[in-house]
Length: 282
Image (tube, rainbow, N blue to C red; front, side, top):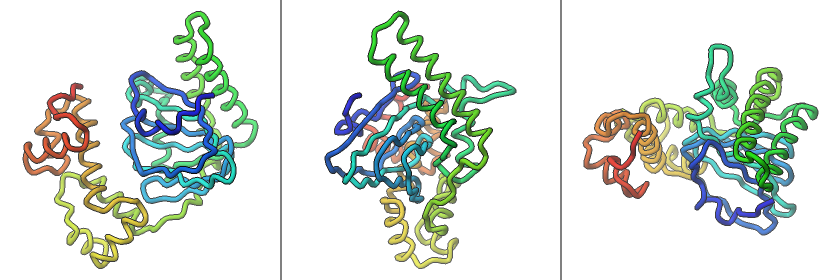
């Protein structure tokens, strides 16, 4: 088992189809809000933790699975009186999307989090055990240098994704709907994400959601860790980046994500991501 949590945010990138971690933290530390341009599944082995995802607070129990979709802003809040242990999979969304056929889709387990309006699933023990065993085999394969180890690891990853999607489809009551959240703020988050091409001014949001500007801004910050301006800018940039990776021209991505001109977009993009939009190739 590798204990690399100290470098977790610095290593939050993915340059292959999937990446597996088994982390265990005993020393107290604070996790910041962050997001990734890949999907993530977390299996909580041990610990006391809540998980904040896009304004919702999930009270976790050991053996919960947490689904974090790409670009979702999130962080754990951990009670370090006992060790915080989890297995994590970083997943290239385009890779599992490539396995979408008429009768199955390996990204369905992520898609259902939107349908069910929750990011946490809690399976029966026998189902959880089967999923854990496959993760354990992935970990053992990573530790060894056996014949065709990389290929075997990918096969185990695909086996896990098949098992996970079957589990999600066959256990309709596994979706955990007890998250704590402010419904108004969740509605604002949804509205922002669905209207990135619009101006999204504080005045307009305040009027649309019948909240005073200052109360809305304070509540949003408390629930998400971001100001409304920060959140909107982050979402515009990461959405534009996803569009660029899919071959959308930079000017089109800028306009569809709410930037009034290319120069403003390019400055914001470079400041946040460290490179110009023209360097992103689909």
